[in-house]
Length: 76
Image (tube, rainbow, N blue to C red):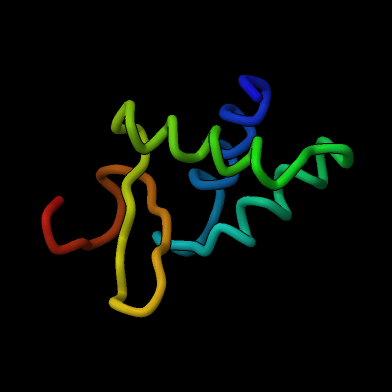
């Protein structure tokens, strides 16, 4: 699971978008780690949010992820 964090951050930094769905993160990790389990990817993404390297962004109907300090959000 620790191997996934750098991959997630690299995806977030190289993405043209400032916010993205979990499915986008999952696809990026599975390209590098084909055997990765969805639950482990979700845990790694949550840990990045908890350590404040990434943020959650809620549109009201769905939750997206973003790189902290990148893009425009309501509270950051």
